[in-house]
Every structure is written in C-alpha cells, then in structure tokens.
Length: 272
Image (cartoon, rainbow, N blue to C red; front, side, top):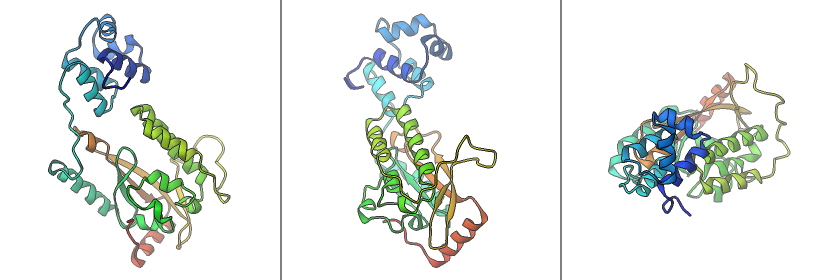
C-alpha cells in the first residue's frame, strides 16, 4: 500500500514511529491530548487541515509526503513541485549560480534530493578529471561518481573514511525520507571495491583537531585536502527547491589553498 492509498491515521502513525516518537511525546509537542492523537491515528477522529500540517511539521515529514497526508485527509495539497526551469524558481536558481561562482577557485556543486547534479562551477572539473565518460553523462549522480571504481575512487586517498561519510549521509537521508531509490543507491555504493591505495580508517572518535571528515584527493599539484559545507534553502515551500543542496569544498590547509590557486590559473575544465 502506497502513501497515496493509506489513511491519514496510518500515515501519521507511520511517520511518528519512524521518528521514534511515542504518542505521548508527539501529543505533548503538538499541545494536544494523547487521546486525541490516538483517535486521529485509529481513524475515529478526522484531523483538520491545520492539524495535519501541524503534526507533519513536528514530525519533519518531507514536503511531498505532507501533500500525501493532506490528500489522505481529504484536503488539497499545499506544496507545489515545479521544474527547476519554471519562472517562479529562477530567482532561487540565480542565487545557486552566484554561490557556485563565488566559491571559485574552490569546487562547488548543486544537487537535487537524489544527489543528481544540477550545476557545478569550473573548479569541479579538477575533481572529476580522469573519470570515465559514462559517469559524466547526464543525469550524473555525484555520489556514484565519487565512489565508483572508474570515477574519483582511484584518486581519493582516504577512500574508506570518505565512503563511510557518504554512506552515513545516505543513511540519514533514507531515515528522513524513507526513500527506496536512495536505499538502492546506498546498497550499490556500499558494494564498490575499496582501492588498494586507500588509507586505513583512523581508530577511535574524532579528536579536537579532526573536526570533520576531509576529502583527500590526488591532483597534478599534489595531494589536496578539502572540508565540505552544505547549503540549503531553509524556508523553501516548493518541493523541488527544498531538495536543492549546494556542496562546497574548501581547502583544509594552506598547501591546498595555494594549489587550487595555481590550478585555477592553469585553467580547469567544467564538468560536462
């Protein structure tokens, strides 16, 4: 049974359990009685439109699934899903392009909620140099490109750490969205072989000097080390825009910063 054929009560209960809320905890957060929530989940009471949206907000339900909950309760969806080329999204996409350009000479790219490449700055060409052509033909999944044996894997020096980082992020996305496509992608990535050159995982938890998992990658200018940051539209009311993520890679040491400046002067090719 899909979310479009389930009752609103079943959907509420499913998302509550997925978020590991008890009925009492969710009822307290939403400032309603546990009895009322129980009646909503069992179908003995029908929620108002505002109640559906209120509970979905507390449960951090993805926007597209909030629409499914509204339909199940007999209400019209409130969140639109426009194409990125839609006129209404052009101001937001202009912001994305400006962020990518402003990040140069450091790599930055924009992806959708399935990690499909939307746009990238010229510096990303340095990261993708040497990757097999079939991985760079659209639609490009950047996680597959990163870990595939014919992608960036031969050049990622800390492949084990980086793969663990990517798989953990995917696990979080799957937990949040309950997305079968992402679960299949994660299984595919986890099955890729580890390159022989990959450094062993560092034992124990991160220390005070290891504030984040870096990306260490070989380049014509020598080993490079980056820390990544993530930017999202925090107040997006459009399903498509809410899924847009900008990943930026900044030098983790002075040597990488100098090398990126040199590579930028030498010229880099943008990702196709």
